[in-house]
Amino acid sequence: EETSEAHNPIAIAETGTQTDLLWDISLRARIDQAMEVGEIYCVYQPKIDLKSKSLAGVEALVRWHDPSRGFISPMHFIQQCEKAGRMEHLTRYVLQSACSAGQLLHSRGRKITMAINISATLLGDMRIVSVVRTVLDATSFDPKFLVLEITETARITDYAAAGSVLEELRTIGVKISMDDFGVGAASFEAFYELPFDELKIDRLFVSNMAQNPKARAIVASVAAMGHEARITVVAEGLENPQDIGLLEAIGCQQVQGFAFSRPISLTNLLEYNEAGMPRPVARMV
Ligand code: C2E
Ligand code: MG
Ligand code: MG
Ligand code: MG
Image (cartoon, rainbow, N blue to C red; front, top):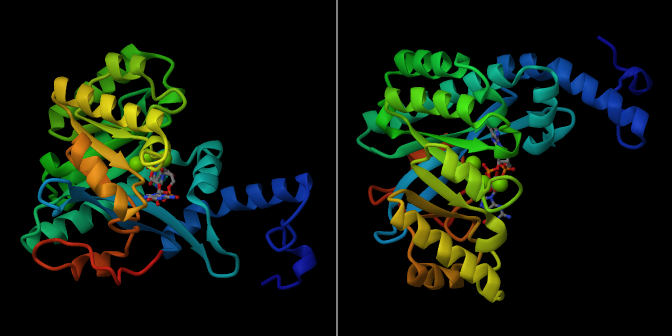
């Protein structure tokens, strides 16, 4: 095995365009192996029912812990994964982990939803439908409890094609969620054109509600819109516990954020009490 740092593209990749490129290339090459050995895994962030303050479900968020380099940001390696053409593979892996975890929770009487992120780039054809079907069959997880959060709606160029993929997914029984609503191209147009069951208001607005009347107005109007359109509305990225009351006054179904819990390991999640309340001691990941 090569140990010399000078010959290791990962070790020299701290600065500069060329070394960044080497780092990204080595990252891309290592994605598959990282999944095989478990360096890539899921953590789970609670989605809290705002009325009852109980656990409604969790969102699986992917992590990569490289033994020599530490944590690699999901934003970064997901982008590399797209470039390497391994997005479908990563999604299958995350889906498999998340549905197994969900099935385990259900077998212990914890009937909560399991959400996973699906990049909009996978909505171009029907392959994702068979991936979801296969994983649901393999894990026996109840499709009604699976939520697919569509990220990077910006990448959807053909609403008709994406719409038929999403409709096909819905016939399986899974729920479709629109992630990061209000920023980028997670737009009213996308909301209007595509069959969503849930809408997640982006953290930008939720985290600034208390100080900024415009942010507050946006959260309130999106919550009202969701109510009118009969879809679940989730506020994401609520950090300050003092803002919980504000959100209750506005009224949306679910809330997610550091105010309630950071993403936690499956082990931690299994230790939650019967009421499903996040523990303040939840380990930071
Ligand atoms: P997202 O789906 O919108 O997930 C929410 C992100 O916000 C997560 O970051 C979460 O840790 C963070 N977050 C949650 N609550 C708070 C809060 O109160 N304050 C702050 N500051 N942050 C909060 P994370 O895990 O780094 O993920 C970033 C993005 O990467 C996700 O955004 C999602 O778009 C993408 N992602 C993560 N896992 C996957 C995956 O398995 N597949 C795909 N396609 N994308 C994924
Ligand atoms: Mg998400
Ligand atoms: Mg989001
Ligand atoms: Mg986001």
